[in-house]
Amino acid sequence: MLAQKVSGTSAGLWLLVPEYLRLGTWDILKAWAGESPWDLDPRIAMQLVNESALCINRVRKKNSLGHQGFQLANGMGRLVTDEQVNLLLDSHSIEDAQEMLVNLGIQRQLSGHYRQGPIAIDPHRILSTSKRVMTKKRKDPCQPSQKMVQTFFSVEAQSGQPIMFTMSSTGMPTTRATKELLGLTRRIVRDKSLLVADKEHFTQELLSHTQESAHFDLLTPVLKTAKLKMHLQQLEYTPLWAGFAIAESEYVFCNSKKPFRLLAQRTGERKEDYGFNAFITTSQQSAQTLVCEHYDKRWTVENFFNFEKKMGLDRTATHNLNIRYGRLAMAMLAQAACFQLRKNLKKEYVKWDAMHLANEVLAYRESDVRVKDDTILVTFYGGKDHIIKDRYENLPAILQKENINPKIPWLYDFKLDFRFK
Image: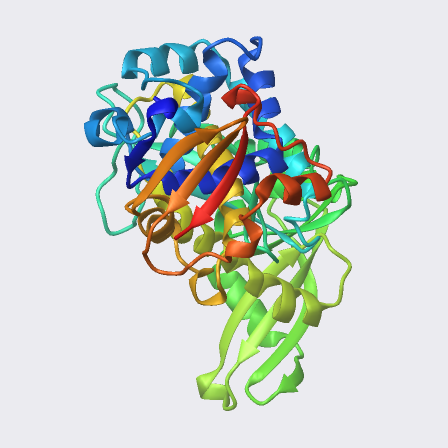
């Protein structure tokens, strides 16, 4: 197919290939598949990664893509079927997917994707169309209970990049799932870190767990009970600026003697306008730093969900956790590569969300793919000038300067280069 030259509109996907090389994606997929580099399984996994990057569920149904070179970027001459994909994913356990994510997280740490800031932890629940009988939960307090899959993410709050996730059925308590998440996260982030969380994580068990941990401190809002509201009103506050003051106290759970550090926040200038918020923490940092600087960064996890959800964070059909874990792990590989790709876009395009990036850069652009000697040449024609071309032209030399082998192992050691016309 390459010898005949492939012409189409989806060759923008090849822009991710150098990012896969920088991330060591092929080695991560081979370790997960447990096969030799000449076998099919890692290439099927590469197809799933590229599907996630395109924000398209089941590219196999899009016949037009099958004739425009999409499958070549996966190192195959065809697209595999749904049955082949599901059989492959189901043959690997949850632990296999978690090991892949740990390997990815370590590589991202080495690549400078994380800025050593606080870590935001948050559940992300995905509505499910599974036919199974299962526990239902409310995603929105105003909506009826529904079937869903629970995912629990840790996100580096400074950069907004994901570190690790775990997944469970709706019956799994948040505290138990979070403890598993933290155990995996600390394999990637070795320095002691502050966790910023929401009210779902306000439990004595989780606070005691982090208090005894050498790896994490926790900062979480306190559920507002009538007793707490009365206590907050009686504290002595230190004004920081107009309409904002903070105070400290102790908090003790019912049937417990262990005190935790309570941070109180008061807003408003007049007594009748006062509003109160309270946080509990195991950290010894100053109250002002925790409340005014660190906690606001928690919302980066919501930005991550909204920004990247079309890669597969917003849909699920099967409730087979082996399959779901595998699919979402592949999506995280695609997300990491797209994060690096955005660094090669001009500033006005860097903040495009996943779907916008897929539509404007990775797909729907006139191009052709052909081979010259030992190099695959991808040529882009016309279109908007989103890309910093100097970072792709003469790509083999650029990769060699970065001490990266320019030969692409899943493409039988061909090199890759780009032309813009």
